[in-house]
Length: 205
Image 1 (cartoon, rainbow, N blue to C red):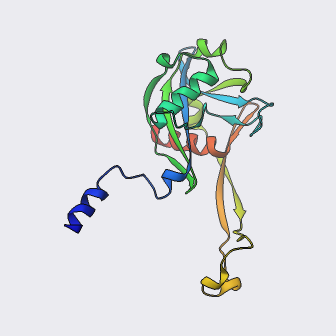
Image 2: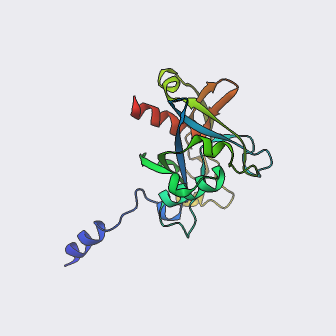
């Protein structure tokens, strides 16, 4: 009886990773646009008046709200708000694997086609400083470069050292993170956007 109940519970709507239900969840859209008959990926430069990450290059997207029915719904909503396009004109092509930065932060990326001409005249100037595109063909032939960022774990003062072996002498490991960079004309794409972009380009190669 116990095992049968356990089996049913384990097969029901599991989260993709432990901690997902309490993590900060965001969704982004990789917009494919036709420019002079050639497929490009569109990027945003975040407005310099934004409180968080002003001037950074990103895909349209943002936090998944409680009112969003799914990560995809959030990605479409945010894209519509930022680029000023009709949600019905966003044609979803597919979904990438979620990017799990940590157990407390996850991003769900999607790919869709959008009408470029509509974006040029409608994007939200309060959130988006400018938009630009990069040819897919160029990205397929470009080799991004990588730098490592190291960081140390520092327990807070109330950490219960008396509960762990070696206490305050415990050897915390130094962690490292890969940061990838794409240089295109005057723009440098890096951070979360570059990691998702790199994964997408690897898939279509």
